Length: 298
Image (cartoon, rainbow, N blue to C red; front, side, top):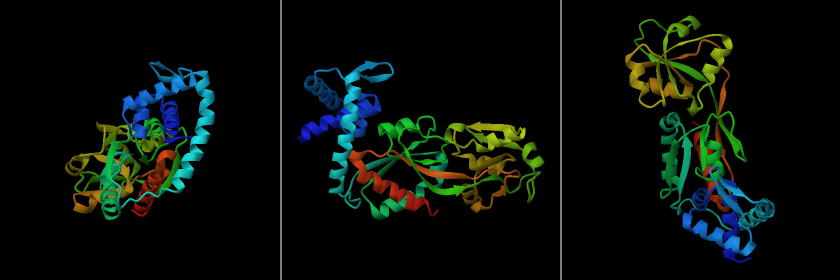
């Protein structure tokens, strides 16, 4: 099999798995015209249209579905063999990795990651995209992101998961709160005015538990993300429930306090998610190992 033939197979598998020409182009890091050209060659070679373009994406023909089973297995074997002889060198690479995380993750985790990258891979770039729990499975499958960090209930497809650490929730409030002292009762919690963040970030466990307990809290502010909430909490009597590590980091300037949530909430895992792509396995493995090593100890 020539390199050209192998690239055609790579293109076919990428279109099949991503469901689009643009998705295949992003995964393979080539232009959309290059993908379209390869698809045209494959159609001529195999005497089959292979995919039909519809509103929901590129739909494979019956022959394409049969070919995928054979091509995918063969390609994985070939790519694994090639990868075994090709070591990724982070000290020389200029690769840009795309990582999905919430804005809270950016606030707390990103400084640790950037320092580690600068120390061990100074020419590698990192692009962070806002985590959307409803789309992350698609992003991992299509290769739109290389990995994701967060607390996600379900990531479908062939995504893999590695637990970085186990976390709990705490309440963040002003150090000069007018009615809450050194302890927080469940009555105080229900009576307080709360800030809540949109559930697509993955932080909805508190709301779920309160619903099960038949409790309802007063929501005074709803926001799409955690960014810029520090000043709101420090200067008002509003209460914000958020992961304990981040709450403890916010109290360092003395303007706020962190107190335990006054009812039992299960702990949750902060995980690393990724979907292996054999054409880039050594680089992706380095990324996942670096994230795991760096964030697993914070």
